[in-house]
Length: 589
Image (cartoon, rainbow, N blue to C red; front, top):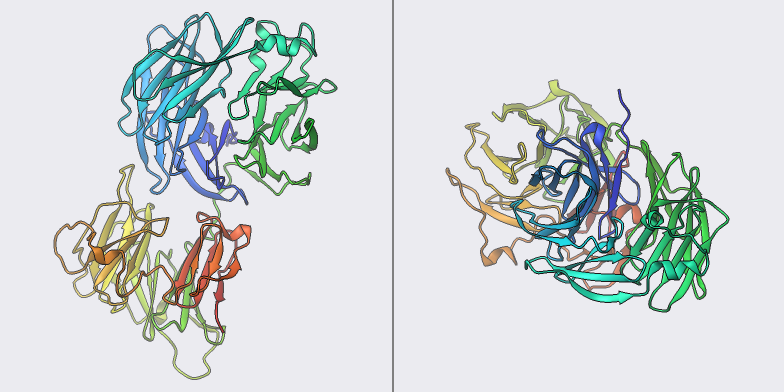
């Protein structure tokens, strides 16, 4: 089997995710930025011949776009909540081949600008609507100037900005996302050649200027000098040389700044990455990182707290706080981990029932004593659980099976198999590997199954009445999990951010989610929130009912993609995909 190679990577603006492109496998993997744990695998449509040149997240980190191609270009966008393809942009211009290109999102995430440098033609910026894939307009950049390298292309407000330069001037330009007007000059700066000729005479020939990397926020140039391959950073606001390192050969195509410019990284010859940190006098060498691939590409996180290096089949991460020991290292294309949990509390808050999604082993825990009460070998993939009265129900792809709990005052560590079940029903739903979640109502009358098929940007919901075993309802809309309210009369569709829409049960036809005022403050409370008033804030603190801080979640538990949080009153279950069992916290004595 041909090994997967990481051709490009990108940090999400929220710093929580890293996307890597694996052209040989025709996939994009979304990783947790802390653990490098795979969270999601995205697949290219069959009609796309993959040659991804770059990856970019939308400003809100909710969608991801892969851009590439050579003679025929493409930009595929995935909705990260559903994993489906949201849009495909394709175009081909006869007689033109692309030398290199780059892509940038508009601030509102509705449009992308794609800059193409054609062989023997001017550079052209194309503007596309993301949702429709329609090209709205294009802008030609005069060949009088040399447009700078692919990363010198960024969003500023409702416009795009880019840099051109020659031997007489360095110019910052601006062009709107929504208007078909000629690019206008924002600022003219001294020529990059003059700046660096002072420290390295003759270093920047016409060909050597391909090593320029413009960082827009602090107005800085990073340059790997042509011929000698030493590196320098120039700040135009202060007309100051911040870095010049001539004792090592560096690679001009592998440089990275953090968003605020505090850190700068560049690949040296061989497998080392040099990391510099801003100081009062410029940049000082902060670390030399040894990589596991011969030609690593460094990539600093937007907040500057982490750095990854990727290349070949491997990716490694480090903290920028000073350690040269990598935090995590993984090989791309390895089989996904299977420690994905499903967990439910019993309505009375006495039991927690959990299982690993594909393992088929269900565990029943007594919350009062903390003692393992029952283990069930369900012999099927588990997609939903219910703990109702004295019964445990397990929902799989095609069937739902119920076991009665063993009776007695001192029952501990009992074991059951499929032969010990009380009843089973065929759900009548064809097997689908895209199934997202399942749930059973507290009155045991309805089972909800949520799934998404193909690349349709919607989820399908099937509700089954146990007595008739036929679908009675389906609903379109984005969601990750169905969740019944305690009354059993309402069904919630909960997305990955914990936001929900409510559907009334009982209709025999297609309905839309009820968006009435009672959803904002439902009398029975949200099914995913603590009924005792506990909550997790955006800065990862658990607040008590009085609003006081109780506990801060450690970094591995902070990523909403790596863990699932399930509340039941004073209990909080944390289901980390990298661990073999959940952690359940009791937040009050």
